[in-house]
Image 1 (cartoon, rainbow, N blue to C red):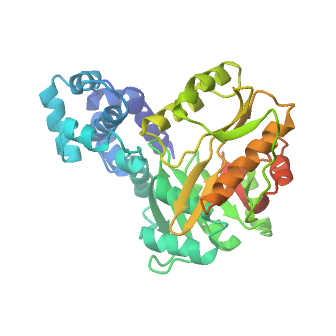
Image 2 (cartoon, rainbow, N blue to C red):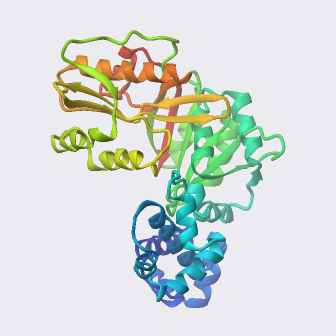
Image 3 (tube, one colour):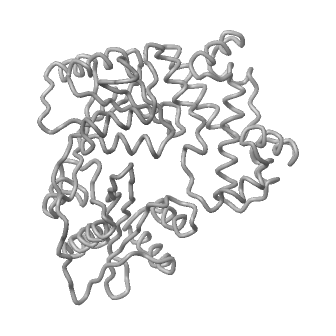
Length: 399
């Protein structure tokens, strides 16, 4: 466990200093280990040497810059510590199979996913720590979720399609009865989700994962699941639990209200100044504005459908639904609901119902992936008033 803490510290140091030329000695000294032993330890945990990890992280970050900025190839090369355009091009081509300029031309107009960038660094880190786990083919893992309960496990399936993910089992990898889904979001620790139908199976994974000092994992359960032994084990091991609920709109139509002074529609690129004003008034964060701006540039999440409620030409409420498509299942995640006029329940109701109507017209359902037991704009209380029902309980555990 102490070794993992050291490796995590080293990974964090490398990622924080991605634009520096880090030597093996600098990384080892920062972690507080001797040079030779640290190299062996790092390889055992991540599958890479420290210098290889640093090189890969630099290249994935530079690829992101190529896709999302207008910086020249030379500027990006120098920014990430390469001495020349030529040296960067050689390294980039060796990793991505094409020079930087060709990569930019091919992918600049496409949405960025971690499949393109992550290199499975966190997944390999996790996999090397638990040799007992047997890898499961992704199609078999998806089949398992579909055949057991696609409604309960929808978010697990989404993770398998939007992130760099591998599935593992303690059982038969050809016919798994339970799964561990490990997703890499380019952070030192991966996202870990358990897909288990019985309390006994879940306890087997928890006892294994308890070796990690900072373990975080989630599990989606049916609402009628009662696991007393599991709850006791979590408390005994000092886990804190955050509870949320997966909710969906179950009907095939909805009545969208009409008002003389309010109207709802999808945002257009020319609405960006209005969105900036909405942000300055505290309606949303600059990150939300940036996401919408990138969306209109064609380089963001292709499933995003920003919608708003307007009053007298002014944006007063914002929704950021995102379409998740797994095989033949289509569902919009409501993403976020924001408003500058909390007292105007009409605007909130209008926006919710407009987004639901948009989803239904796309032959998709509308869901809220992690509603909390509160009366916020995305809370259980508001969801129920709009007509959503609870389909699964989402339990997130951490120490």
